[in-house]
Image 1 (cartoon, rainbow, N blue to C red):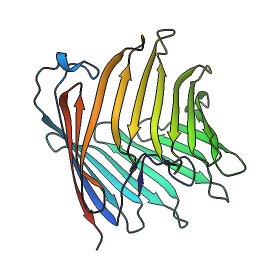
Image 2 (cartoon, rainbow, N blue to C red; image 1 turned 120 degrees about the vertical axis):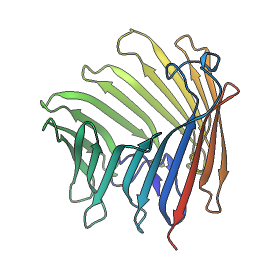
Image 3 (cartoon, rainbow, N blue to C red; image 1 turned 135 degrees about the vertical axis):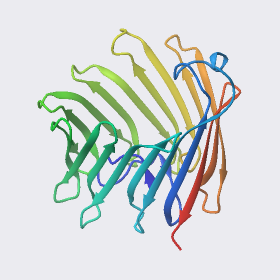
Image 4 (cartoon, rainbow, N blue to C red; image 1 turned 60 degrees about the horizontal axis):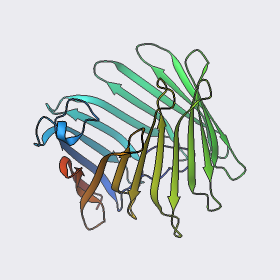
Length: 273
């Protein structure tokens, strides 16, 4: 089972779940902070506060069928339902927010199973966005064009692969063609990604760039993450610690930033017998 997003008929691996997983309950505690990017020295205190829960359900084929996110008061803030076609491809995502309606994403495929168009329709606005995917002769997605409900191009993503078909580069451009995000993945001789370099360009402040380097273990769990500011000085340094169950799925994760424990996540995983 792989968690993240569908690029074509396979899934880009970001974090794996092993074994016959049925449900995952994930609880999160984190420090309070004034804004999301403040340094640990500016935190209000160093206590962890319960912030949310996430509940994932999988079918016996390993497909994610639902997600439910609740806030610290146990009130639902987001629900997602996934349905699949007769060939096992993701067909519809229904995303519901209690206070802002429902969005439905419809996935359409060609005869080879490659996804060509995603339509997104909001219940309250009745406006459709869509994306169009372009593939190479090996069936790998090379470009994704995103259009708004007026049919105007809102952004483009380009994907590059190595000889082993590992995804090594992703470029994201805005509607004017300006590069705003670039991601470079590095793989070892076993085709396992162990490093990711991310560059972000501020769309307002010309030339302002933020860099982030992330390191992964063999299960694609983050082990270290270094944040650099626009002057390339180290702004933050995260270290991640894990505890695992017998299937090698993590059940506890701690995020330590600049020496301070800032986040803890606990997972209860139920397996099919």
